[in-house]
Image 1 (cartoon, rainbow, N blue to C red):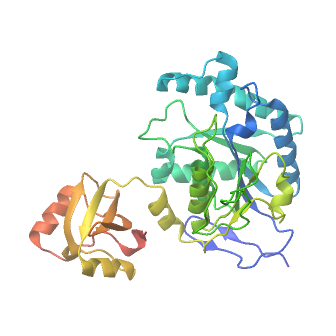
Image 2 (tube, rainbow, N blue to C red):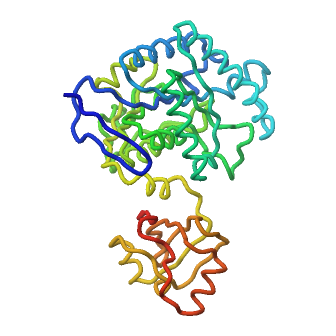
Length: 361
């Protein structure tokens, strides 16, 4: 009999076995170099191929969420300038995002599929309420049979609030929607070793060939590897593969291609969010005894805190340091002002970070 599973933000019941033909929840990322033609404009014919391949996967029952680059190139195709200043690059993205979505919409409508656009920044992940709202929106769209297409909101993103690259963005999205699989499509056949051969399964000590960043994108193979490690450490099977030559449905249904990043056991969803997506507002420096307690899965008490820095409020996250080494990220129950008073009183009856809200690094 089919093994059904339920997923909520607080309850996770997963199948521990897999078999061919199961229904998968997938996030697919298409990089700029895939989407941009030799003339610097968006390759409309290839987006037509993407629509056809996604349609086949959807008809087979799989859930698909797309993360797509290409807005900057779309703007270049219209304005005929690459832009140098940040505001000029953001203007290119503002114009190009409309063009990109027009092309996606026209090609998906030809095969009877509706799409939706979501533009996100880092704050949409680090703010818990907005993060959950985004997940719920994606879930509702897919229930309606709509394909979500996600991009970073480059027109407003600055260094302080941007995710940085769509590889990382796709990893965050995959973790948020509890995807079974993340596929990072690119123009190479996978991660190459120092001999120029595709690495079938990526290990920590792999020696790779040096490949430069992309012309139109914000990263290269290095950002893809980092993103793949982030996603796989949170329990998402991740594959880096050639998007020109590989069929989406075949990969979803088991074809071995590209470079595989095997997933770890899926951790607690809230702790994953704390450890990967929040922006810490301060640091706590703790002694050896407190460090041992945290590593043993216990809460952080005032007696173990030697010092702290930063301006933080109740509910913010902080980095927790043992000497000069970060060992965890935790949600504080008190502001920095209140913590200062607690430490000055020497009262150990307060719980600074509860064990359930501490993620070990």
